[in-house]
Structure formats: structure tokens, C-alpha cells
Image (cartoon, rainbow, N blue to C red; front, side, top):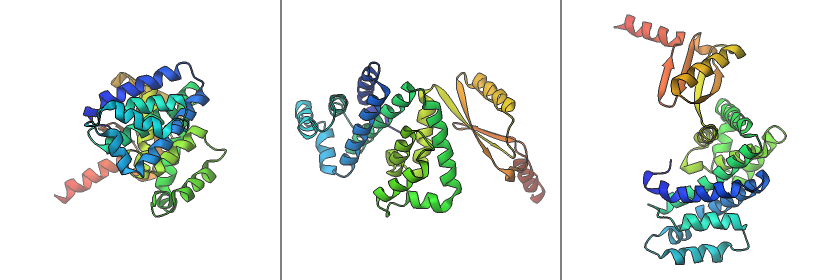
Length: 273
């Protein structure tokens, strides 16, 4: 998560993204996102360049001239505008600057999905893929293994998701492979799900049940949670027979655990005293 001291600098770039997206097509905004993420990949392998672009002791004009000389003609004008705005900001560290460039790329992809009316599907696809890699330990380990060339892991993701997920979903999973914001692979996927929900002004509710909920029950639960939190709530349901019965709901740091497993565990502890 971006530190408070850098949010003001990032807000200016957000304004540039929003202004561009208000008149551009979803496809063009996606191109902007891809270009920003390509620059983030470049910066991740060039620590000296990161320092030069984020050093607040260097005049802004000198930093913007540097980014322009490096990328003019290599990325589109919208990407260069956003990057120039980021370079002009004040950053607490080169790592924070890199995070901001990567975040801008992700935000652009999410905006493009929203403009195309696909953001809800992207959110669900990211969640389902995160569940798959969490359940399939061999697959999750292979995708998270940084000793495996990134190109090979990217190829594997594309093979797995080709024709089964939106292009933006595939692109975001590829972002997670490199550790979005310094996180692990699965944690990166979880964070991307959260960002997709937040862009739709919704909280995430992670629901665990012993057997699938009926659609009417899901709708009733979502409505109740939306009323409680004063905001739309997106349910992410996991079926786990091990909890025996009941339901567990986690929203942010709030946990409502009404599972039979919890009650049995508490009963065992009570008898053991």
C-alpha cells in the first residue's frame, strides 16, 4: 500500500489518468496501462535510473527532461504525460516511485475494464484464479517461483487462461507474477481483486460455507452486509466442508465466525481446562 506521504504525488497522476480516460476508448486506455507497466518493468531492473527519476534534490525540470529523453517516441503521449507527472512528484524512496508507476498501470487497466463494462467479470476471474492457485500447490509454487524465468511463467498463465478470461484479467495476473507492490504472487492477486472491487465502490466479503449457498441466500447476505457497511458488497464464496456447517464472513479486518467448526473448537478448549 502506498504510504501517506506519497499519495498527494500520486493523486496528480490519477487526475491525468481520469482526464484521458474520459475521452479515450477502453482499448486506448488499456494500451496506456500496458505502456506504464512496461516502464515499471524497466525501472525494476534499473535501480540507478529509479533513483535519478525520484530524487527530490534534483530539479524537477532535469528529471522530466530525463524521462522525456528516454521514452519519447517509445511510449504514447498519454503514458509520457502520466510518467512526467509522477516524476515531478516527491517520493520518499525510489521503491515508492516504482510502486506508483506500477499502480498507475494497474489503475489504467482497471479503468479500461470498467469502460468496457467488464470490471465485475475481471474481479471474479481474478478471485477464481487466486483460489485455483491456492488449492493447487504445485501450480501455485511454479507460478510463484522466481527462479523460473518470468517469460516461462507468463507463457503458462496465458496457456491456462486463454479463452477463459478477459484480456485485462490475463494482463493483471501477469502483473501479479512479478509481485505487485512487492507482494507474493497470491497476495498480489488478492490485492488486485480488492482494487477491482474498490473501483466499483464495493467492499469485499470473503464468505466460507460448508455447502454452496442458494442464489437467494447470497443476495440476502449481500444486501445485509451492504446495509451494515453503507456500501455495496461483493461476496467471494468458498465452499469448505471442513467447517461442518454455519458460515464465516470476513470484511476487511472484521470477522464473523458462526461455523460449527469454531463452536466445536471452543467446546474442546473448554473441556480441556
